[in-house]
Length: 626
Ligand code: FAD
Image (cartoon, rainbow, N blue to C red; front, side, top):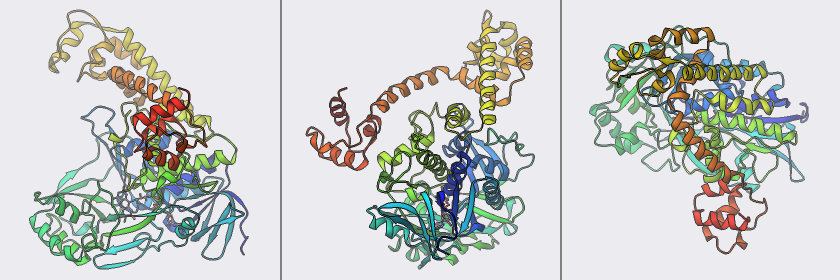
């Protein structure tokens, strides 16, 4: 019984967003992978809102797809609405977001994994690591199995010692309706790991048939919906489901406040930190007492289901307080509740205990990915899973780890932040965390990453061919626009209509395209010759957008590329692995402590550790002979 299963290369513990990506990428690269999860029915559950992407998170999903991961494809196959957010801002801020069919999302992930040759499944709860002579040998499970493997990726999400709070009640659980996981934290602490507690929460779900949508504002999807995946052949959405907006009011706030003395947030039951940027409704009312209303997004949970997600109303107040408060919201007067909101506390492991490959510093061949590292969000979890899957495979092959830099990808920023700075509250990605966000756009993730991924054996040749075609077409378009002149009588009426100064003599198309509000389609409608040249090339929509962005923002992009080069110079200065910082007497005491704990691999990483000052960096550079 103990050894009924064979030995695997990799065991991935947990079938959430991180676990799915880890199993998918390691197996696609050739590792023999066992995915062990508590309930195979619940693979890739969206524990909170039925949506993917959004600001900075949408860029991450595009990056996952460009690297050959599965989240983009699954998202496209299960989308019920697509929106490109922030189109009125510059392209660095354009952010794809979908509303998804929750059940279909989970089903598509399960099918995708089942179709991946080297992924095997086992339903069970892992309650410890198998360690022999100080070496990781696999996992132990609650039903008494000992399953052998060369490496393990832990992606336990919110399940480790999970404690659910609902009003004054609290009970053990990893997520609503699912049990918590015990044993792993305790063993890791014995092995010398540090652990902490975090908290998150979710809103109630209600019956869409009980709502009056005429009292709300409709939020339809984009007229021409795009997709997440660069490579998948799924068509864009031909129909979409709308979301709606409504608002809380002073009556709602009064009802909610009436329950505050029973709130685990305020009566001391919940002690751990929650996501600051995703506050509960009681938190919002408390912190922003001057506001008499808060926005509520009414989001469908799928194509067919009547269940509705009440976005903006995350709460752990008693269920009857939630119900009474909901009834005060316009459109919700006759609401029927399906599930109450709740909060959950869980264990995480401060991520400074990992290297940039997401392997733990304490146990060889043990990797952590997802919420277990102190992050929050599906996209953050999925991207770590992908990187852990890639790196566990490379490690077993004796190859160098695959590390993305801060100027390569949001994923690089995410992992670098976690490893060099750690996090004391649930970490969520924002565009402001990336210093090179003009380079890290959603439109060019494939140009940045697919070739790198192909080189390590993950992105397929077909995927790379598509990227190469996009590069070719983009360059050809730029060259056409550079060579073609436009005459005043062709363009001046368009320029005037857009409050742009008219031209007196012919000008190259690319120099006009740089002007604000002047678009590629303006140039094409001005010049028949130009339009015909472009038609002859027959470029994809992606290439057209890419050429336009590269021409329009060339100045900004070049400046940022130069800054990235400067940063990368510091990234190239390696610090020997066993450097004894305590012998460098000029370093500050705090720097010695932090550098010894985090063990940065490069000067670039050292410079980002909080507590390491620019003068500490200079001392290190002198020490390294620079
Ligand atoms: P999870 O999706 O939690 O998956 C963990 C997986 O591991 C599960 O399949 C579980 O069964 C399995 N597992 C756990 N322990 C074991 C074990 N010992 N043996 C075998 N299998 C195991 N994110 C936001 O961005 N915004 C929010 O507002 C938000 N609110 C949330 C509210 C709640 C109540 C919850 C639960 C989550 C919320 N999240 C939110 C977080 C989001 O759901 C997670 O960030 C994301 O799902 C993390 O992915 P993961 O793969 O790390 O873990």
